[in-house]
View 1 (tube, rainbow, N blue to C red):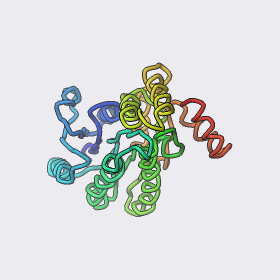
View 2 (view 1 turned 90 degrees about the horizontal axis):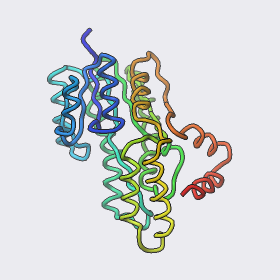
View 3 (view 1 turned 90 degrees about the vertical axis):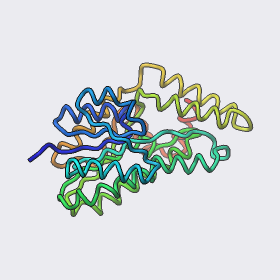
View 4 (view 1 turned 180 degrees about the vertical axis):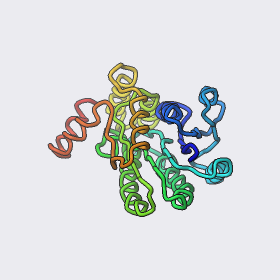
Length: 272
C-alpha cells in the first residue's frame, strides 16, 4: 500500500508546522495548508507539500482538497489546526469579528471535514483530528467568542464520532494547554485593541498583560509536544477520543470539574 496522505491546516507556524514535520518523519505524504505558501518554504525543503487553503474561502478549500485528491487519490488524515483567539469583552467585540472567529475556528473546520469525508468513507478509513483547546472545557476572562468556538468544536466532534465510526473513520480531539506560540500574544493584542477603553479597560489591561507575560515566559509547553500527540493519535489502531495535553491543561480541567464553576471563576480572576 502507498504512503498514507495527511492534510494539515494552519501549517505555516506553531502546532501546525510541527505536526507537518512530525507526520512527515512518520512516513506520511504531508500536505501543509495555509493562506500563504511563501511562509512554508522551509517545510517544502523537508519534502512537505505546501498547498494554499484559506478556511474562510469555500472555493479555496474545494480547490485545495481536489488538488490533493487528483494527485494522490486519497486523503487519509485531516488535521484541523487552523484557528486564532479573538479576545475582548462580549459587549465590545464587533459582530463582524465574532462571525469571523466562528468562521475560522468552527465553520472552516466543519467545511474541511465535509470535503474530505466522502473519500475517507469510500476507502473505509480516515483519521480526523480537530485541534480544540483546554479552552473547550474551561474559560478565561474576556475570551467569550474564542471559548464559544472551542466548546462548539468539542460538541461537533462528539457527534461526528458517532456518525463516522461505522465507516472506519476516527474523530479525535486534541486539547492543548498553554503552548509556546504567538497565539497568546495575538489574543492579548486583540483584547487591548477592543477593550482598552471603556468600562472593561482596567480588567482587560490586566488580563492582556498577564497573557503577554505567560506567552513570553518559559513555562509553556512547546508545540512539538502537541505535534507528537497528533502523530501518536493518527498512527495507533484505536486512538483515544480526546488528548488533553500541555501546560496546566489537566490540572485546570480537573479543578474545574471537582470544585465547580464558581471556584474556577475565582482562580481565573486571581491570575488575570
